[in-house]
Length: 107
Image (cartoon, rainbow, N blue to C red; front, side):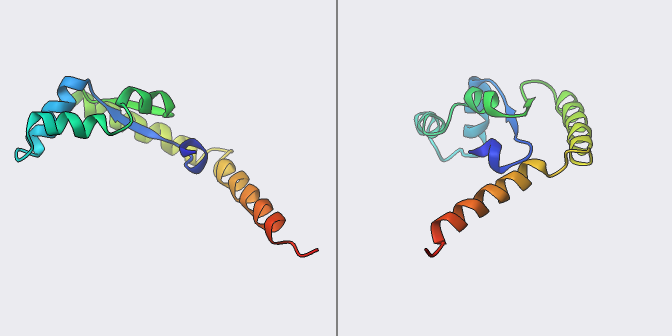
């Protein structure tokens, strides 16, 4: 699924109270109950975080967030430019190619 299609999955997460406050702040036309329903209709943030390669916590200050983003940017750049660059995508393409050939081979 997601981890197979993308080389590096990054999730920005915060606690549920802050998530609700921010959603309502961006959408003042929604009631708090509508905001809760919108959040409930999505995969829970902590589940997304468990599936990610990298999690940036956005519960603190802007300074802390910027520091985390800088570090993640550096880490991901090192991964992308490293010796295994593109390997996951290469195997994915080979896998889809094999499926395609098997499905459309004329006997």
